[in-house]
Image: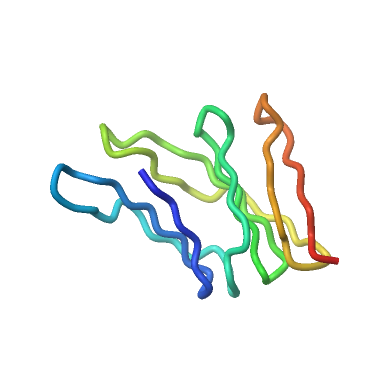
Length: 100
């Protein structure tokens, strides 16, 4: 499964079958470009950061053999564009860096 963030704030999840890529999930957490994404080590949580100065947190659920789909848990407004995200190894804390 591949997750990609786009300039319009959309996140797309794709999975590969034997012959093609298929869409698993599409969601739009941000009103500007997605600038960072990070998964917990077990893949159960996803954080996305954007040029809209927001971080969104999602909780994942397995969908058979295709991967996880994610539902929003909450968001945090930052003081500037999010440039990188990294979960602590236990998934209980998120390190955030911003442009300013």
